Length: 222
Ligand SMILES: [Zn+2]
Image 1 (cartoon, helix red, strand yellow):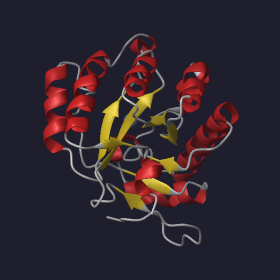
Image 2 (spheres, rainbow, N blue to C red; image 1 turned 120 degrees about the vertical axis):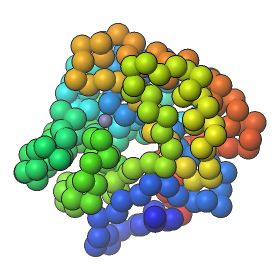
Image 3 (cartoon, protein in one colour; image 1 turned 135 degrees about the vertical axis):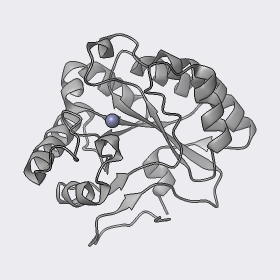
Image 4 (cartoon, rainbow, N blue to C red; image 1 turned 180 degrees about the vertical axis):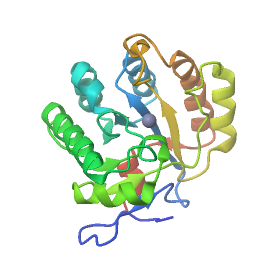
């Protein structure tokens, strides 16, 4: 995987899973928001001096713009996760992907004042093909991950989330959490309550192990 953030003159779409194994930094990322859980995630991150990266779904950005505004205002990064959480294995038309990515970048820019630099395909599906479309839409990198507790599972407990992240963390890791369930009206409630419960201990234990928590763009910066 790439180990430095390419500056300008990009000729190949760039897919990244991790970075900088020489620095004790991890990037915590949160997919599928905004939701009713997002502000609780922000509170935990802020209490620990941590910054996160939120790959947002456009149709929920439209419904919860204040949450997205707060995410940016509190110093966290916003990434693009398509408008409807489209599955690239089922919807294969790149014109549809382009429209979903552009709409999402446009609404984020309108709320946060700047467009996202990063893209993540829903389900991590067909990343190479998505990366070409994302690059054509002006995004700098397509971001996957090396660590995930699969915290989207309805039956998962916060102890399991904590153990998986702490035991798998490594320097330069990109960790995939979720802060929303975009296809579900529970997204207005607290859909990822177990993630919110797990986060304080994850942050404390990894900080005790010498880790700093940075945004993906900070992690990728040369
Ligand atoms: Zn997703």
